[in-house]
Image (cartoon, rainbow, N blue to C red; front, side, top):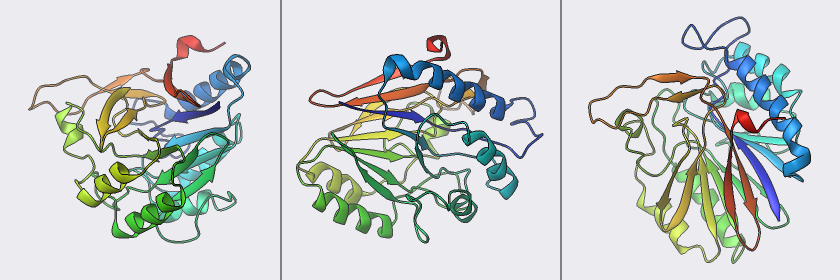
Length: 260
């Protein structure tokens, strides 16, 4: 059994600044990391911590510098993919010492663990909120999946490939891409997709594969399913996901009430 912790949507600000003028995302992340550290003895062993995008709110050097200080207390080796609030080159500099960070192009990566291969898929389109799987990323994914025949795969990406019912978030979701869907549908091993972006635990299916959207570390997007609803935030609504992968696979929601 291989276990992977997923956190998402950190939205770290430069030191001394608050998200939306009122939410201390840095304090929330520190609390999350401390809580997960205390929980490890009863949920471990855990192989990796994966951050599924929106590491920062502003995408600037000051925010990544602040995040670097916080991640020094991470309880596990970690990996990350960019979200729509990130900036690719500052993020690349932030994680330049990490062996999984590519030195150019999309921030896609692969790691083979005992029971599963985890893939990081870059869906960032610089300067806009919605996401896309580019031709370069599709070519990388096609070659990677070809090399992973029959093997279980867990794909981390920021933008969900499914609608969530929260119309304002779906409007800035992942652009449809038939080739991407076909690649996932045609892979001859188990595939799961783990996303962020929506700040809520939501499940669905895409290309016949299960999709799990993780909550954020400090706040949630308000649950309003009316077509004309805007985006609101609920402070303190946070969580993480434990992916438990083996002969049977499951995803477990972790809330702050689980912390020890």
